[in-house]
Amino acid sequence: MGEILQFKRPARQARESAGKPPGRKASSVIGLIDYDTAARELDVTFRSGKAYRYFNVPPDIYAAFVAAASQGAFFNAHIRDAFRCAEVKKA
Image (cartoon, rainbow, N blue to C red; front, top):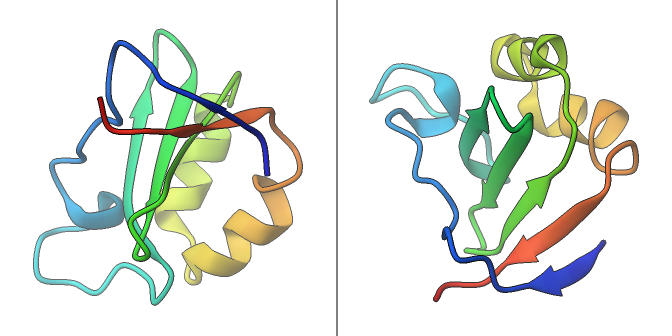
């Protein structure tokens, strides 16, 4: 996927599961999504527990990701191989 880095800032925890209101199933594969607008960094935590930070992700890609009917399919088609990423290890 990408390089493994240990960031001073751990993976951000989304306030809502995958950007949807609490109680709604987000995805069978994706557990949490968070986006830092200023840094243009997208954090994706998978249900497996692995977390990745994607760099230089435009806000419209994040918005479409959150709104997608299938977040797993959107991730595979528009994010996974399109942006540089690094695995986020817990500090």
